[in-house]
Image (cartoon, rainbow, N blue to C red):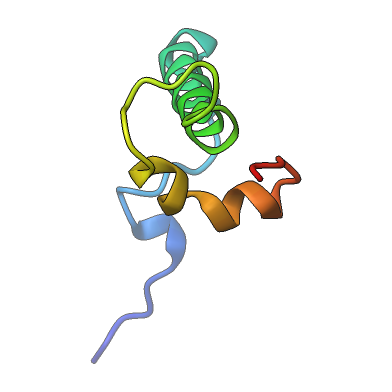
Length: 75
């Protein structure tokens, strides 16, 4: 006969106890996420302008529609 199992039988799903993620484990990922967001914002908003890092129009053309979608003028 088959026995009925419940979610509490699964050893990989914690039930009760301490399930919160400590802040010291979240901070490095939060810093990484903010840094990644700022880099993306730079390329969409500023690149190929007065503070460009790359020559040519390749980055500008790649993010052109995103630039207009976010309200940044480019021409």
